[in-house]
Image (tube, protein in one colour):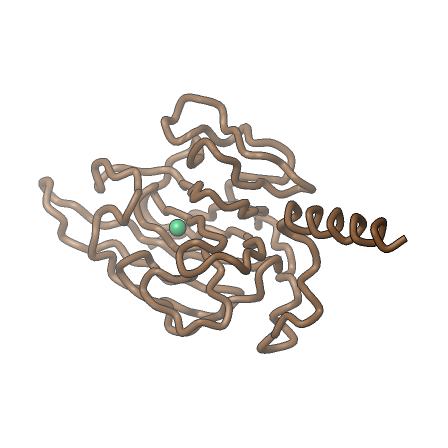
Length: 241
Ligand code: MG
């Protein structure tokens, strides 16, 4: 009898370890009751370009811009799958708002950049970091940071496994005769909280970005950093400057 209970516990343990979005342990410390509630899914408003509707990856390719996107679709979300970043087929320029919903797995044995790491790169060049930074004093590489450029004004993270959102208002840099005359800017809302206010983009390509000519349009890139992060409801709304 004892032995079969032991086996049962072992099997349950293995199942939990393999399931990144299993319920959080009963003793998980939530800082705030809202941190365990998913953000409300926000569908594309009128005039927006839908990049992911929960059903297909037709609007995406691998990072090379050629091969079919290989990430998994799980219950209306796309999930990072080993084999590299993916990029939208559509490229963007000027001013626009990007809406993305995401959630990070619960990986208690990971630390720092090794927990639920992914990223949303605007124009393939400027990363808004996706990471499990729940409860941390956020630095310039933590969740919500514009990677290496600016830390979020506050830590607005929900707990791991809980759906979160970014609303990123982006204005591309302006070039004249091949010279940058105006820096690009980003305003970012994380779960509805403003964490960046017209931050100037002081780099033309944050770590592991696509780079390329910063005066040219670029796609939305989602990063494979080896963690099964999920995304849903991804759309772009062009804005007049
Ligand atoms: Mg990242």
